[in-house]
Image (tube, helix red, strand yellow):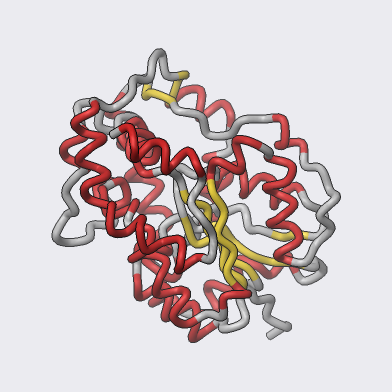
Length: 292
């Protein structure tokens, strides 16, 4: 058996916070290797397949200065934290988080691609049991409990191995944003990826809800069956995306009462978050809370 290539960085969350954009910016860098599979979901859903199965995703990165993966949902599972630390204690961990109301709005429009009749109230409750094939878990209010979800990482990893960024920073200055990631993983921060001037994974709606839901379930099954790289390639196929989705015709803000409910759910979390991550929350978050 040849020398195993192990990842030295992992983007562990959060989805709908620019993760597809980040993945593409990493993939463009000549000194970085990320597998075709965005979301190997190894540490949360495929751990029983073993480390050799996981390391095989990175076998082509032996000549790259930085090797890693982007798996949006690792932060949702405390078991993932412990598994990552036990297997990759020197790994650098990256997070990007988004203002809670904006994130929940994005969650709702994302899930509507597959379940057009879903209502935001359904997302304000955390499903009692995790179901890999049920989107409600990865879109529920629990996904914006950033303090609870990030704290297990800070409990085991040294702070200098964790980078927490804000989606606001990506929107305001994508060049500086990706430079911070490049510098953090130890590659040339002056590199300018083509994605800098592009928007990635914008809100969409399904052309045919049943077909898009079938595609989602099929992709989940393929990942569990070990075909995550194939799923990654299919997801980036522009023709397939055009068949499944079209641009969102309109996007409305959540009702004020719903926004208040969201902040009532996460208020304690937000108050504890700055001390944990060593950063103040963006001014826009504070202003938003004042309005609702």
